[in-house]
Image 1: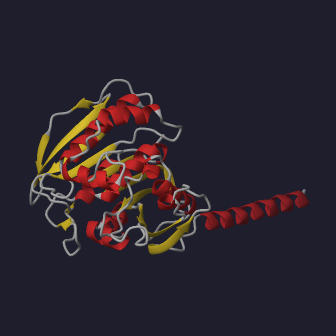
Image 2 (image 1 turned 135 degrees about the horizontal axis):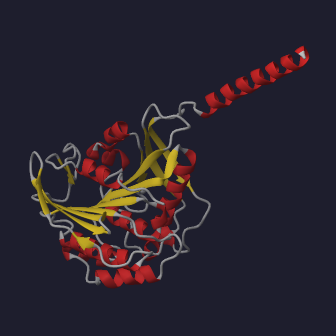
Image 3 (image 1 turned 90 degrees about the horizontal axis):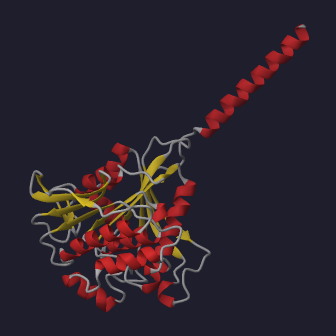
Amino acid sequence: MSCYIRLVRNLLHRWARSTRYWLARRSRPLRRVGWIPGTFRTTQRASATEASSRQSCDYFLYVPSGLTTTDTVPLLVMLHGCRQDGPRLASGTRMNALADRHRFIVLYPEQSLRVNPFRCWRWFDRDTLNGAGEAALIAALIKKTVSRYPIDASRVYIAGISAGGAMAGVLAYCYGAMFAACAIASGVMYRGAESLREAAAVMRGGSRAAPESVAREAAQNSSGCVAFVPALVIHGDDDSTVHPRNAEQIVEQLRAFAQHVGRSSGPLTEAPELRLSSADRAYRQRDYLHHKRILLRKIIVEGLGHAWSGGDERHPFNDRAGPDASRLIWEFVSMFRRD
């Protein structure tokens, strides 16, 4: 009997020691936190064309301190505009400070100077619009980041400004199943242009393509990874670089896409417009709902040019006057979780 008791005690002791060991191992702090530069390389060839055959991408990752291997936190992907890079976008938007406060990881993919001397994403490239090219490269980088860090795959969000906003829209259309929500600042609609010349014309006055027709075609050609992504569209009404008409076209296109893709039935209902005030300037906000659930929000900031509202003015394309676009974006996207 005493031998049996000793055996049970030994087994319990070993079990407890093993449990403590594995718990300690599983919940260890992350080794790398803070500002992390890197280069991503994919073995898959995105396209046969020279313009879209990139297989590598520099990036910066911001990981808040205090995270452990057992945490599951959201990921926000931030795409810079022309004449920007990852560090300037992070500093101008102050998104990393928001990440510290709300505990989420931020990924900053970076366009190569070899591809474009102004670091403009090629959102108008036909391969990219079809989900290949730079869209495929960024999507592969996001998937790799989700697999390597304690990220909740159901809470992956994407946002961008200008060319980055247009590229965020491309990814939302082509890889909708990856994202719970997106935000497009000073961008243009999906397939608004399919060449560099068309892109310049679209920025000046909007696309000649019909937003609803493009949305219907995208829904009919959708694959298993395409789904409607809830979106925040934010634009300045004094933007002389990307005309505010583009914001109206993005909203019109997204409303049509929501109606045609997936299980949604019936159009999004339009809520009354609100005129809200920040410390420096006012902005107009309108929500679009499906069964009383907000799926789309448009914010037009009065007096704002081609800049990040509420940003650090020491960096180009940032306006210190409010409202705080970073806060507005996080408050919107964090409402959603992908099934």
